[in-house]
Length: 256
Image 1: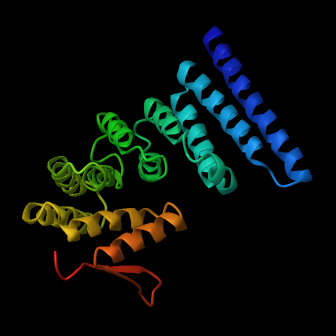
Image 2: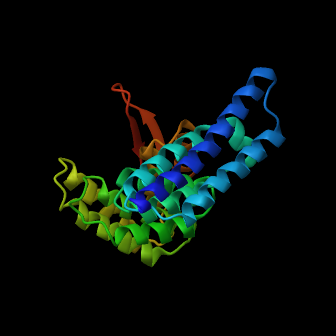
């Protein structure tokens, strides 16, 4: 029981800090538009909470800790006015806490991998944390597990220029896809192998990069990310159109 009590003491401390932060925000919003100084203070308090969690033991409540931080990450990422002032420096901390406490949290991994790379500009951290998580994940855990390898390949190709590592990641994604029970497993495997083929024929392949941005586009992280992906696909010579059913359709560039 002492361990459980200690956990709840730590949890209460964290919640208290968040509560104070929320009350302060409410009071300020009731007066005038929030200013830059407030957002910086809010960012410092969020960092304090994350630092406390990083050092504090979980006492067997690892999944609860990961879930709670995922919800906090969603709130943090979606606070556009605050992010315009402070940027996204805390994304790697949310990512690390979640991976350390629940490396099998597939949906969180997919969301945070894209966010951390594009917004915190930390592809090396993304790849390190995905590698750490993948050590605890099997292909049959979730129909979405192959996408972890695909997203890792995206970072390796687009942001680190490591074509050899990217090809290995895409090949593994294809292998894992065929082991899932997803009705789309054949198509997912084929799409990853197609990217490998593009890279084998041309390491600077425009089609491979379009395929990588297609993964980011399909992530649906937010409208800003989708617009960025569309712009990059178009710049590479691809086209993005909207089907009558309301789906986005991507055509590869004619020349590679």
